[in-house]
View 1 (cartoon, rainbow, N blue to C red):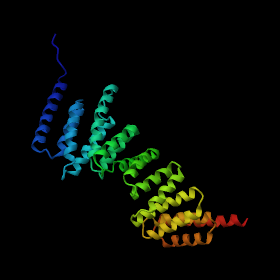
View 2 (view 1 turned 90 degrees about the vertical axis):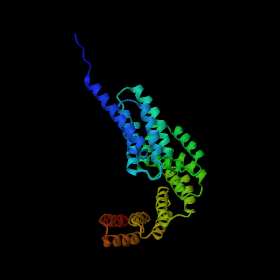
View 3 (view 1 turned 60 degrees about the vertical axis):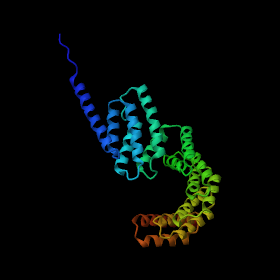
View 4 (view 1 turned 180 degrees about the horizontal axis):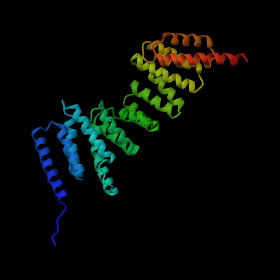
Length: 315
């Protein structure tokens, strides 16, 4: 009896070997071209050779931090690494999947440490990382990065990502650490106030909003802070302070594309205080301007609300 092996698997191995040699040669000839590293790491992952993939990823990350690195190639690198870390190359073996994930985690941490902060792919990678790793471990990573680089914004970055993910309590941990390193940072104070606000710690939120107000910042950013502060005042029932905060926001940045939103919020606060005449005039002006269909529609809705409120007051 003659036994024959599954030839397609042999052909696949030979093809993979030729492809591996091709990318190894390209990397040797053009070490600055990151896409070659990424393709080779991808090939190793497909062939279930995680250790080789990790070694290539490490070299790619270093190449990606070099000045003049192609940004499209860097994006592709982080997209591939993110996909691998998510488990998209898993073949169903749970134990092997965990081992692969643990090995890749080390590379992900190196990428988070070295990647440019303004990279969307970096943020995607950090979003995945924070969703799969406990807060304590992430805090330890941040500590390590901060000790190695006193100018690092890693706590702020991670806090922003937690806040974006809706994890305000975890964001507070990061922002509080960032505050210890830069107490006069407007962005951090504002972000910490927002996080406290979201978890219902209103006294703490007010303290941080007030601290942020005392720090120099562009008018538009100050105006956004005042808008958020007004929402806090409404939540705690202080309508007069909410009104004043909204007026101040409009005065600070009258040409902001958010000024219409602030105006509508001010109308609501005026209505709640029964200041119908001023609220009506603001709504009439907004509806008459006609530049923004959304604002016009909302202003008309509030005019109807004012009519209803006045009718109820007369009963």
